[in-house]
Amino acid sequence: MIKTSVLIKQLNKSAKSLSKENKKVFDDIIRYIRFSNIKTRDAEEFLQQILDSFLNAEQQGVSIEYMLGTPDIKHYCEEIVSAYKSSYNYLSLYSEYIMYTGIIITVLSIINYITQNFTIFTGRDIKNFTFYLNFGSELIIQLLLIVPLFIAFYAYLRKSCFEETTKRGQIKEFFILWVLGVLLICIMVAFLMLVGKIILFRLNIILVLIVGIALYFIGKYESEK
Image 1 (cartoon, one colour):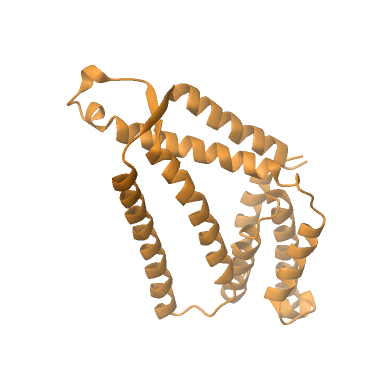
Image 2 (cartoon, rainbow, N blue to C red):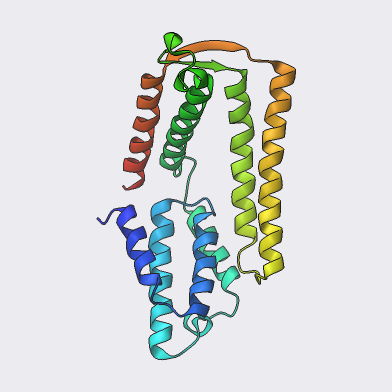
């Protein structure tokens, strides 16, 4: 079986041969499908099928709407996503969640370790160098805010698919994302000012990274099945 990462590389390479108009539509399909919370493997296999339809349409000189049998491509994608989700059970996406958990643990641990030991890394307090990562209120706040924010971000990107993009629309999209980023930072700062830095426990950063990386590869391995 071809690995999902290989499918993605093949897809990106083959999509470059599409016409400018079809490439724009196909990019919307990619974004919609990948942000629809279905298995990565299912998403990439479906996208490859769609890409084949695009390439065949261009070779035959017909529109992609004619090739797919519908003028509403967004609705077509919605039906495909619904069909996939209806075949899932509660454990179908466990491998994806394990993989994402590994990524979150790894990234947040590295960021917090650097910020907690900033003075050490800048050479101003080298005598207090430690491999321990403090788990406290700030880390919990980050988890409580980042997860919902990512869900909202995914929903926004999916909703914005298949819409006419103008220069004004692009500026509006950038402004919304910028406001969300600033809002996240302000909320985190406000929570820390109210709650304070309460250290609950400490763990070796190497152990934490091993757990995070292990979860990522376990989830990735299970998602390939």
